[in-house]
Length: 389
Ligand SMILES: [Fe+2]
Ligand SMILES: [Fe+2]
Image 1: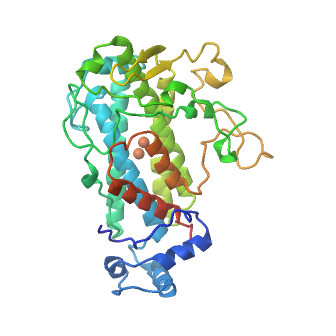
Image 2: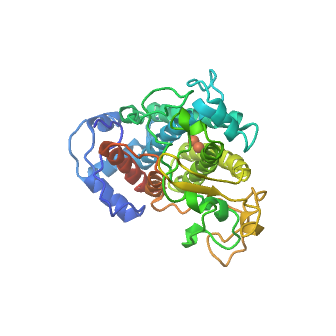
Image 3: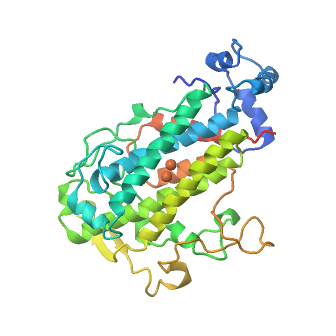
């Protein structure tokens, strides 16, 4: 697979930790690409570690120079944004606004109406989130090109089927929204005053039945929009999935920003990361409006229950639906006072954890081995990035 602009790394499963030592061993495993060397004004084949480090250092004055760690971080984020665009595009075709900003699809009235039970402006929010992801993807790739680094292209992996429900385009997809297992721990995590996953805490699921089994978040066919309760369960699944995806971006950007070296790359990560937070905040608010409903999938037999989150045995501080801003919690060290923060933000292994999270979500069910291998390599390379002084 041609990957120009970034040295090829053979990623071991066990060394994806961002330490200075591992970064050295990364360089030892590098087989420099001719185009990478050409970009630095050097043409050569295999180099041992020290010459490569020297070239790396000499290149710092070059106008196109980006530390390889920054390139790796940006390439992983470009891939993540392409995947986000793909999934949001599917939601927009059925329940968003299809226009010149976000073209494709023609809407599914029954599904859109069920989604709008969470907020009458859901179609606008879905549209805007989709457009945002598209611009993130395009910007990061354009920036990589401007630095003579190879952009990320996932087109060869667009092999998954579209929904057959009215309103969806019939094109190959990167992500699968029809067999999701949705982690809803963000709901309790941002309401907890005493716990933080950075300290090893595991928070409870808000919708336990959504976190097991496989659930469609979009109608698979027009049969899925026939039953009121099941249709509402599909729409509610989407409503929680929106926040699940965006809380991931909310953590991922600050996690990786801690290992960016170039101030401009740091600026990009902070600026895009802030919009992921805005997305999450919006969806966190809307998910709390999901109408209570229980339904069984007539195709798979899998059941899901969306309880009234404001009523016993739920309710109270942890579940109250209008707690849409983060509660203060422990941060950095328990000796400090509680602080209202994004969590988690630990940087070690963050890209691989994000990839694992998306995989566990079911988004890639049906994807090829090559896809997972490609994404794994991008994640490991990003996690090997070390902040340079
Ligand atoms: Fe994004
Ligand atoms: Fe996002």
